[in-house]
Length: 222
Image 1 (cartoon, rainbow, N blue to C red):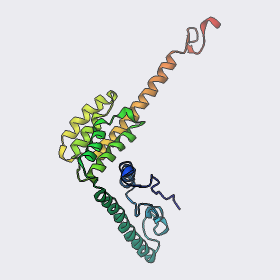
Image 2: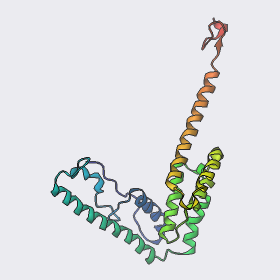
Image 3: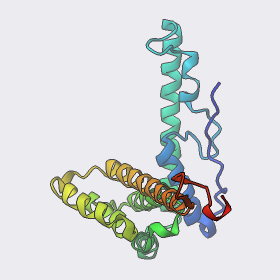
Image 4: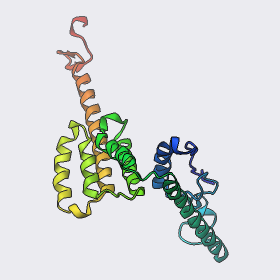
């Protein structure tokens, strides 16, 4: 059986750790999409689907029905988890200008250089946008795109300029997922170019023996 992904974040104590708890829990919900209970007792059905289905069809009509029943129950419990989070929001009166400012300021200040990778950087911005959405303040896609571009380093300047023109053509329907994928891919290319350049520089520093025209032979020692 495949490994079961479950939430292992910090337990919710109360208002004192609510914001940090929400950050971790919301990101988990967004990435994995399934969390039937806050304490993650239930199994992710995708991890056991192979017990009921082959690659193309159910193993039997009975197993297909059983899987559908489990899927229905799992979906219901997932909604309960989301409901619990929203109830906590209401009970603790978290919907305040101070809380909204907390997340919005983090979005404004987000910088690619503060993270280990483009994946971490873009995930951070996505998660903050999710928190605001949960509070009832969904950011328009153009705003998210602007924030993603804003925090990139100067090495992305040419990429950003080209992408700005590209997304402007369909500004009301910007594909944020594709934009993030393009940013991550660009980072990979930049790193690859840096490594290639470093290897070329190292190769050029190896002495050239004039007689044999081969690198690595030092003429005075021949």
